[in-house]
Length: 172
Image (tube, rainbow, N blue to C red):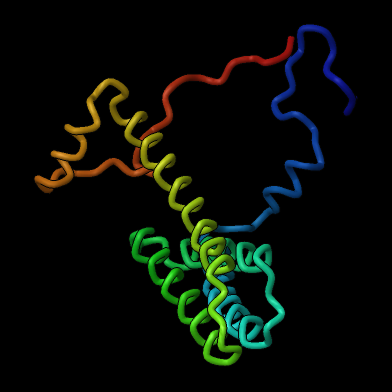
């Protein structure tokens, strides 16, 4: 009882404290959006403050860009990712120029690393889009998806595509 299942018996859910920590009861997507909306101005202010103080390294710049980019995407789920990440790139560029006006030197490498970190987010959003298209119609050429989108057709989103297949046993 409460331990491992007996032979031939499959548990309904694998007992693990990890699952309970990853999905606490009562956590909703709206709560995550609200937290991200709080995080965006804090992270944006922090990036400018630290740059003006002069104590930011390239690793800190990349981490700040990732935090600000992900928080912006979570804070505005109905906005296009490219627009939001462009806004973050402009904000980071403004921070670098403000720091350059104070120190007299523009740190190009730090700015490039921060923009490369935003590029990683773009890669992951494109992977998500391709996965959604594959769930919609796996064998339809990509150019037809683009044509349908340009013609005003309905674009498949990750949330609107049902995941096919059935659960299967992974242990006996």
